[in-house]
Length: 384
Image (tube, rainbow, N blue to C red; front, side):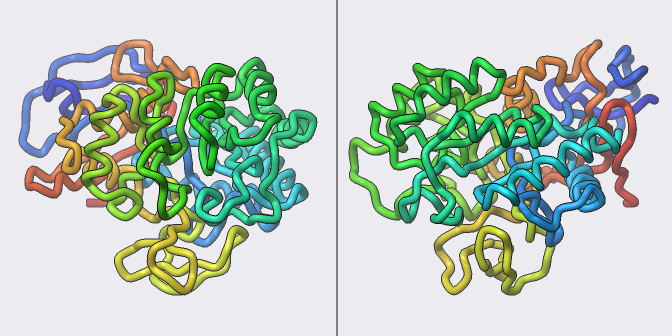
């Protein structure tokens, strides 16, 4: 197949030829005002579900996974981590097994899943850091137990978010890293020393930095400063306009450097539903008229997100003043590299994972997806 558009990094009009699931060659195209932008396919490390279906649910089916993947393709995402969150062991094992079955039996799913993200249950049990995760299931990391989760997932857990505040965390992190799992710090009340020890053990990522935290912290030291200052940690950010104020996004990008920032959506299973109150496996939540998802009965404590990754791309340009190339790479090549996917990019030989989109030239920088191509197959095309 061939697609025509403007490169996200140079603006050059090109024809991209894809063969056997790879980018085979580029040729020049005639410039035209209506050409879409072409970028490496977007890679989202944290998607909890969509349309009323959580991945972390006893009700999850292969068809349910397929519906979520179809919705994600419409958002321009070609690779993602289905995220299974803190729950009872039987629910976790069920969800992990169903996702693995979906990957193995549905090619369109297998082509788009970069690995499973297990967010919990090894998180802080303290109010604030644990966020919307169920307190009764939060506990210290246990390697033997994790191996049971990995067995249920048929070896497909590629990313785990945990809190290093537990004594068992350093040894667990070393074992996880040795097994090929990317370890992220999140939902934590860890001290600076515990964070440094976790990074020494191999942790490389901070999950949704600035969220899953106490409402009030000491000026210094605190676990946000400690993670910001640690150059060995990349930070994932939810830049939907609700989770982090613009000034915080700007500060985080400046502190970490754009090359150590990745954008995530953290989509809730309730994303895509109209405003109202909903019961989920995590908690009861409200979707407010502005799209903000909060724990039911108030408007400050967040419960995942509803905005697609394209919103984060547009917002990080507006909030932090980064250019299109930088913002796109925060949502594509940089998260992919964390998962050792060095084949994601806009170059000959790269996987034919491509996102074609339009961008508003006004101050909003709004992103609109035209087409999503996964493994050289068009999996979404806008009717407009």
